Length: 72
Image (cartoon, rainbow, N blue to C red; front, side, top):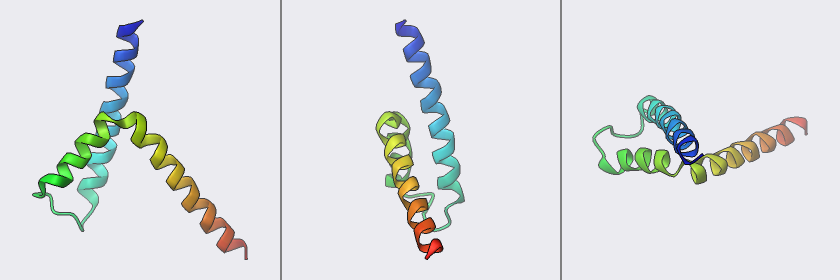
């Protein structure tokens, strides 16, 4: 049971790392040599259990605001 949870956590952390790294790499406004930027990618990957739900909520709010503005 513990190994299954650990496997799930590590697999998801790896996926989040790939997504964050891809977004970081595509972002032209951030220096790739800035150490804090790399730390944010690593911290976001390790703490994906907190970061991912917050990101989904923020993204949903943004889309909802856009739909409300568009419907007016």
